[in-house]
Amino acid sequence: MKIISWNVAGINACIKKGLIDFMKKENSDIYCFQEVKASHENFPKELKNLEGYNGYSVFANKKGYSGVSILSKIKPLKVIQGLGREDFDSEGRVLTLEFDKFYLINVYFPHSNRELIRLGFKLNFNKEFLEFCNQLEKNKPLIIASDFNVAHKEIDLKNPKQNKKNAGFTPQERGWFNSFLMNGFIDTFREFNKEGGNYTWWAYRNKARERNIGWRIDYFIISEELRSNLIRSEILKDVFGSDHCPILLEIK
Image 1: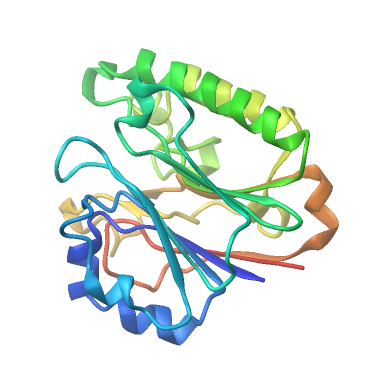
Image 2: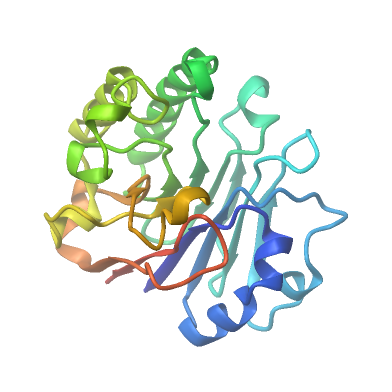
């Protein structure tokens, strides 16, 4: 099974930059998109009618904000929208599909924002998300496709020293990510690649992507139980269309 995850930074904008051609070329079994910034009314028809795929989405109440979507060739047994808490679910951040052998969770984590004004909100979301995962894992293992909005370790961003008090690299966010993985989850990319310089997001300014001044904040995380099923986990850094690039997971 091949799964691709991508923070598209606006699904309609990404469509105009070649998203459909990319999807047809990759022919992935499942696509997980974060930050679609759409609603039921303006979700692109090209994706609604994409041959061979079933589409599922949750949108934010606020227009042009957040939202996640999944397109899957395989019909799920069940669709779970959100975490069951209105303050989080109104932002359209979590969508879960139950399949025969696993749950797939597509999640777009909150950003702590400048001056960390949403750090408390994010840490509460993180706590609720872990509890949600622990409940699901009692039944089946998990595959999580996500923009976690955190760089885990110093090798996961170009300039760690300058960013230690900034959103996405605070001790609180990194500490939570550590504890999350210690709950029996695996950062799949690091099973294959231990090197620095591998990023999934670059700021639009100062030719950051061209100079590879980036952050690795997009991850495929799996339950420990699925470790032996892992085939590959890659960053598709040469695919454009967003300030993020897609990531790919192949699993038995």
